[in-house]
Length: 365
Length: 179
Image (tube, rainbow over all chains, first blue to last red; front, side):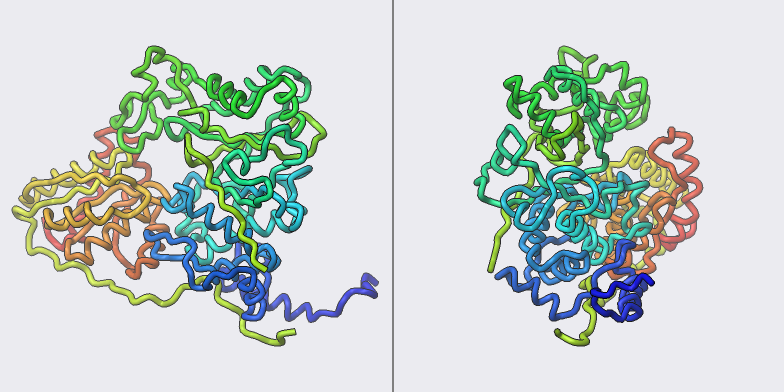
């Protein structure tokens, strides 16, 4: 017998039939959702002083708006606890302030997903993982905060795959993508402090991403070698949809400390990556990305009827084509376990040369 | 314990009033001004010019004016929409060949029809479903738009002309005129 003597009794058939109801309504990302009724919703709404009908995010082109109430219902369905709700609200505000989501990126063939980064004391208080397995499963706060955004995208904005969401392949991060910064093992100031918040503030930063590249560099002690490994990955031609790209560098603590020991700050690393994320004209010709479409400014072959020269063509070094527009196209943070020379590059679609979209968590009661 | 309660709808989908009235169709295109609404995707202008040229040759349509959206992923901005409506008798818009722009191209057609201008929205046939989903959220389920065979962006001029020829019977049908 596999019965657990101490386990509570439940009507499992009724629970399953409730979950099946959500499936039949297509109110799901494919995984079971938590049933939500008015009384459970009220526990979420009690965590904010804001009006449940207040609009958090509108997509005028889809004729749809997300209210505080809808954000709460979807967060509860995603498995968030009521005490997460102020973080959910900050996540939505940061997402709404990002340039791409309101411009239809979630419908796009590119197949991006929202990425959330949590900083500050709320990480500890609610159990956001910033250490080992930071991109992996196993942590309720990370898993359900990311899912809360995606479930509402599907349910409220109608972004069902194969319908309004036309992603060619999308990314595995589309179920949920939420990480926290390992501030404790970073040699530098955390992301939110770098952008003007107090260390005692908790914040959520929102980005749009497609790829998460694994950077394996266990045997170098040289900041230049490691910096080049990062830059060579960032400039890869496959990432060049637009004229230039942008990246979030998520350094493992060991890599961050390697740079810090050599006296490099985040700005030094940013500048080094910018200077070295450069492709040769020949490399771009070889892959048919040596020119731009005149209106969308997407990269295409110079023989295409819509082709115009890229910006690098008009410089003194037309054969050197930068993959980044400005050093601040690179955002740097630290996450993961301090146990190996492993880092990641997240390829983002968003601001190039501006501060990230970061919003403070407003705790209430 | 709250006991048994109703589950909540997480969509906020109130049943919006639908408005699926098409603009009145002209008796003929002779002398009428054709608007070409370019969504900036590669080969959109070429395809629009080929179609407008054919409408002039076959139907005696008048001047063709090119308008360019500032961003393909969302519907046309209000000031440009007003200008197009003021200056044109019928509009062709293309080309919805991606997730966001296919939906936006269909939304543009619906906006024009509701302002009294017959419109032909052209997407690539990979994006029929997103176009239809957009028509639904815009309160115009069943709005008719055209599908060019995918792809469009990578074609040369001769291939674009072939796409135009394949679309012409449908363009004329949506505009309610015979050639």
